[in-house]
Image 1: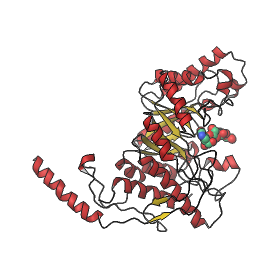
Image 2: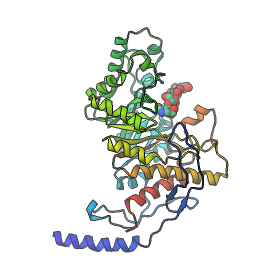
Image 3: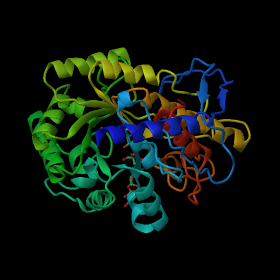
Image 4: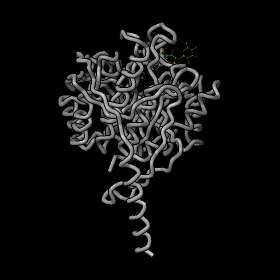
Length: 404
Ligand code: G3I
């Protein structure tokens, strides 16, 4: 039986080799030489990006039948049918996700349909935060996040909890209260244990602290928690989350993975603070800023034994000149570069964007603008695939089914 299976596999591999030797990729190099930017690592210039050429209109991706190297296990590429982001990401053993806008989820059927079809991970954009879940002391409201978690579970999706401790989205009763340091430590512990405990076994990963560090690894001093509790709030938060759900992966969610930042995380872990990974937000500022250092950043986390998650990727285009076509292709290159950097490292396990359709983006309210000014995401407002979405699919395909 085994011999026949091996012969069948060998035959299919030969078939796959023949077909794959006919497939090809266009590639182009980045003409832009860009300046770095304080939010994300800069670009050295002369980047080259290999991806299939992008045609206009519907970006259908058809997959040849190819077998991977038996050394990595006979991973089977799917037959010639259109693939979703989710099915392609599964070939590469990563989760691909989106932040969820609760109002859109409840009111826009097409939003819900695409979300459940294309993604394998969800991050609650707003309703799991402190002010939303504990609007009054010891009074909790889980109606909105429960709807998001139920949607994810009904679509066999993983859930990233976001975020337990941040200097924003805090309720007025907390900010305006006259609390001792010990009272605030107890409030923080109770909040985390209640929220994480409510979703125990259902939320696989938590952004425990958000935007707590400077790029050199020092703690930001503009955080309510840092000002009122001091540096200990980090260990208090992670230990409370771990006690509430020992099986959940616990992340620091921030902008960096510089040597200084990673050294700081190393120190916490050496003191038994249960940090499993780092979320890299990657809100891009403009098209001139590209993630050339991202692969090195993820590799730095890998060397430290930390998981890396891309947690909030979006790529606005309004600050750039050029034709819309040129800007959308430049945007696609950036999305593909981030995916490519993630796929280069086994510790990069989740690739999440801060939304998926230009119909809804935090940038509109944040900047006081409306579509079509920003267009930061991968689907148009009427849910057509943009070049960025096709570039992600091609990058996933190239990693899963490289030419033999
Ligand atoms: O739900 C209320 C609604 O009832 C009310 O009518 C409306 C009035 O303004 O406010 C609504 O709440 C808003 C919430 O988003 C839901 O839309 C809050 O005011 C608004 O501040 C909140 O903004 C979110 C922001 O975080 C603060 O929580 C954005 O949507 C969200 O995209 C943004 O996400 C952050 C990440 O958590 C951390 N990284 C940066 C990222 C962008 O700022």
